[in-house]
Length: 273
Image 1 (cartoon, rainbow, N blue to C red):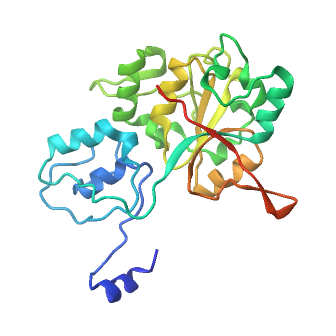
Image 2: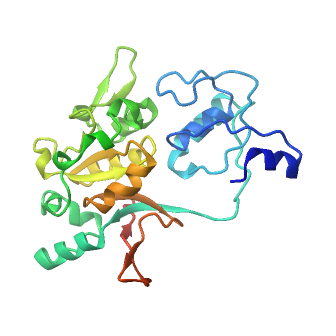
């Protein structure tokens, strides 16, 4: 992005960078003028004036319910989708190629289909880094992630009924039950976290809502972890075997092999309902 001074000179607007959010949903509330757009409980919405006018990247399809809610509740200040800015992105779960090859050689499983992760039939966590091997200093504590979002976890609880994976406070707000201060464990491996595979993401929990739901419904042994910084998100998967949240187009996790002309990709797959 060009410096704000260049924007002013080229486009004739006075511009100011207001900052970034942890997940795409935060942008909805910033654009509405909410005084605490990054808050999980009370975002301070209801103002008639906003000083945040443009968000250039939002994965709206991951927050369909929240988008509809703000449109209905705050029609005068609700954000508008102005269309495609030049490219479309795709998000998915990604698995290191070396992990896939190891699992295929050992058991003949490909790890590119959700049924390969069902703990009733397989122990896929044995091919991945378990949460106990993580350096938690490189992770955000649960309290600083979307696991504390009533919108995210309330939707999770409504769809799964997993009362052991959430906590309901005195005001009826639903948040995740945190384990070891930095993780959320799916039911499939909650009794024995050593059998969990670590699912790794960035921001304050990109893609975390759908991942929790799918892990529970598909009986996948998933432990979620959120990187403390983008640098940690980019670096840690080079040292550990994670299932990873990633998107294309983006070159962060492309793996060069021997020379610059050969690229080994992580294997990506969608877990669709």
